[in-house]
Length: 500
Image 1 (cartoon, one colour):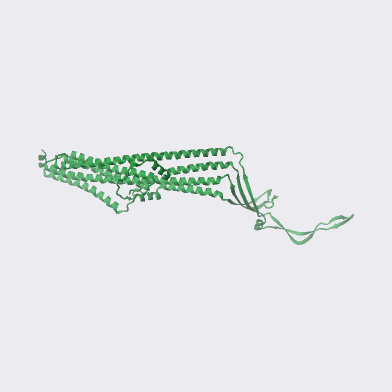
Image 2 (cartoon, one colour):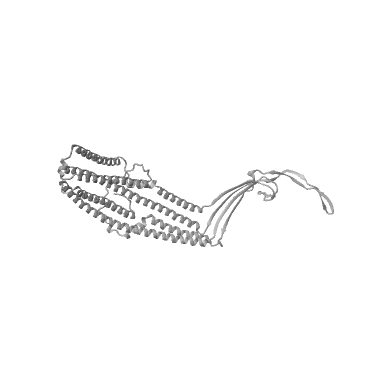
C-alpha cells in the first residue's frame, strides 16, 4: 500500500512536495542565520562582565544614589553636631526714627523731639557645660552615619545579587535557545530521513506530517526561547537603569558547576559567624542600638544645669546727641549781693562761654562704644515631666532597636539555613539530571538507528528525541540553579560575586 502510494505520485505532487520541502528548509535556514547573526553581533561589540554590570549599577542605579544621599545627609548631621561646640556670633543693627515721648538711646533720657537713631551690636555666646548633651549628640550622629553607610552597603549587596541573578538568567536562557535551535536543525535532518524512507516505501506518507508538526512545535519553542532571552536582557537593563533599546551584550564565560564544591560539608555556625561580621543589614541594626543608647544619655542631660559664656560689643547714634565745647571766652553772669560781715557786697561771677555742637556719626560710635562679658547659668527645676518622658521614650528606642537587630539576625540565620539546604538539593538535582541526560542520549541514539532502518515510526523517534530534549533542558536549569545556590553561599561568606 505504501509502495503504491509512493509510486503513484504524479509529477505535480512531486513538485508540490519539493516546494514544501524547500520552504521548510528556508524557514530553518533563516532561523539559524538570525541566530548566527545575533552571536556575531554580540562578539563584535564590547561585552559586559558581571563585575562591570555591578560597577555600572553602583554608579547609576537610583536606589544606590538614594542610599548615598542618605549617607551624605547623616554625615552632615554629624558635622552639625560637632559644630555645637563652637560659639555663636551674631551682629545686629537697628535704624529708625522715633516720635513723641521716647528715650534717647545715646543719653538714656526722655525726649519729645523726633530722633533718628542707629544702634550696632555684636554678641557671642558659647556653651561651656550642658550635662554632656553635645558630646552624646556627636556620638549619636556618628553611629547614625555608620548605620546609613551600612544601609547603603546593604542596598548595593542586594542589587549586586539581583544583577548576578539576572546575569545568570541570561546565560541560562541563551543556552536554552541554542538547545532549541539545535533541536530544530535535528528535526530538519529527521525530515530528510523520513522523506527518503517514504520514497523507499518503508514509511507511510503520514510520517512526513508528523515530523513537520514536530518541526513547527520546535520552531515555536525556539521563538519562545529567543523571547525569554530578550526579557532576561530587559530585566538586567532595568537593574542597570539602561534604556530598553540600549544594545547590551554580556560576556559568556565557561560556566561550569564547581566540581570541588561540597555543600554537604557546610554548616550553619561558621557561615553565620562570618555573615554577622560582613552583612551590612546586621551591622546597621547594631549601629542603631548604639545610637539609641546615646539618645538616652542625651535625654538625661536635660536634668543637669547649663553653663554658658557670653560677650558683647555695642554702640549707638542719635540725631539729638550734642556736645558742649568751651570757646575760651569768659562771660559775666548776673550780679549777686553777698553779705560779708554785715555789709552787702555786689559780686559778679564769670562763666566760660560754651557752644552746643552736633556730634558726627563716627564720633558718636566711638564715644558710645561699650563692651560686656559674663557667664550664664540655667538650672532646670520643673519641666512639666517632659525630660522624664523623653528619657522613657529613648529607652523604648533601645528596646525597639534591639528587637530589630534580633529580627535581622534571625532572618539572616534562616536565609543561610535555607541556602545550605537549597545548595545540597541543587547538587543532587544536577547529578540526577546528568544521569537522565546520559540515559536519554543512549535511548535516542538507539531510536535514531532503528528509525533509519524503518523499524520504528516517527512518533516513537520523536518521543525519544523529546525526552532527550527535556532531559537536556533540565540539566541546563539544574546547572545554573546549582551555580546560583553556591553564589548565594559565597555572598553570605562575604566573597565577591564572580562567575570564575
